[in-house]
Amino acid sequence: MEAVLDVYQTAYDPNVPVVCIDEATKQLVKETLVPIPAERGQPERVDYEYERNGTANLFMVSEPMVGWRRVEVTKQRTALDYAHLLKTLVDVDYAQADKVIVIADNLNTHSPASLYKAFEPTEAQRILSRLEFCHTPKHGSWLNMAEIELSILSRQCLDRRLPDMDVLKREVAVWQDNRNHEETWIDWRFTTADARVKLKRLYPSINN
Image (cartoon, rainbow, N blue to C red):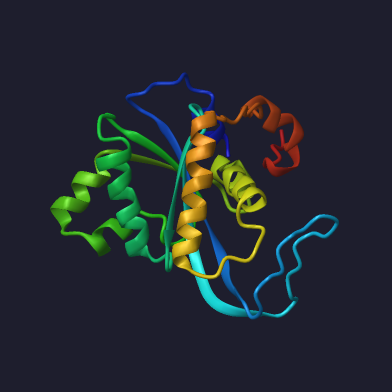
């Protein structure tokens, strides 16, 4: 826990950005009847019945210190998907950075091994050399600020029926662009000192 909090307290360095990564699942839902549009005195009316149309995965990549985020929609969240996300992170999103510090949880796919499953060893090592991982502890995923971004995305964009991947990608892209345009950043104030007081019960007892 303190390792993550210490990273958040470091001074901003554009050559070594701190990027949070997390993912969520979205159920795709088709309407069985065409909704009746809203009119004066009447809200939009949607039938309670619907048709399940599979699920999609959403990777949230967020640099909270500068108010930037990118959402990648995929069919699944395998080690290969995660590896390609990391490749895009270092080759496209942060091509000019010396190193990218990645905050992520301890999901089994969130490890350097994923890169070696997706790429030849030389390429995997090239990508890995540009990354430094800092994992949240077990039951400590709330320390990952990408989780906050996913919560906002869920409330502002995903709290409705979206029928398929194409619509989901389009709607998420609009949300992403609008939020990046606003440069909304996260004012994280929970520090290591706070943790030692407020979460004292989580620290081991020292018997003198």
